[in-house]
Length: 421
Image (cartoon, rainbow, N blue to C red; front, side, top):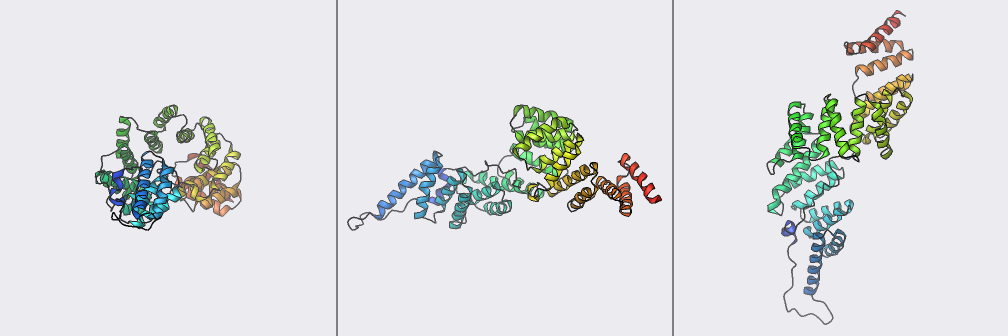
């Protein structure tokens, strides 16, 4: 899935005349007084026309008339296809119109014309990241950070932007690298609320809950600059068993932002976790109406239905979720968890073969847990696969270690019966 941290707003969009002064240069005019045959136009006239067209393109860019800028620059680039500065401006105007395919091609042409041009390299990396092409974006941005921006006054800010983008790319899969990129950015520019948020999330991922909480508290004391801060803090509270604190925070946020779909789904998830399916189910169904193939929403709805003991419908919802392609899931482990949920619903519906099918697939993604061992044992027991059931009941009792008293009593009761036979 494309990363959620690269919205459409993640563009270079820091255009100014000085930015490309080093790459565009003046138009080269011929020596005055050169005689030409009658009826022909002088090179000076043609160059003057181009200079006028370029001036108009600059004006169109300044006025954010990107369609006109693209039209003018397209003609100019045909006459001067190796002009890296104009290629960058053309790509910029294309990206501003959401013509991402064309913009990516043009940025690459600008880099080919001048491999040392920082602006096109940075813009290409940001575009690739926003489009979810994170491996390509990482490679491009790593090239950008060793180049020098054309605008010396903005050099630190622009290079820091590249470092922050690299930190965002690596935040989930390589938190240590993300921390290093963020430190590099902070050496060039002051810390922003977004930086503090990333520090909190990286600390939490590293298991440093004390530092994570301190960073969240620092952000919340200033008042969240966006719902993203409060949502991240609520997720932190939920992960660490503090749903009582997270619930009112999200309810207040949703009251202030009633159309925020992400807030609604997170609050619905929290209601499910808090064993309040009556509140969760209508919110989840509304969210699924907009995105019917969202695996996390389907898993939450199935979980709410389980809490309401609607096991038949829950099984259908879980089955729909696990049938989705793996690339629709944020993490393979999430698919594994949902397969476990499907196994539970199928067990409640007395369908042991489906239980075993789901658990077999889950085992390729996640290790066994006491719960899955118990489900597998009871399914084998139902199918009269006694030897396998006895083995699994023993494994469950060893893993449970007194934490599941009801299931442990049932396992011992069944073992006594099966081993007596």
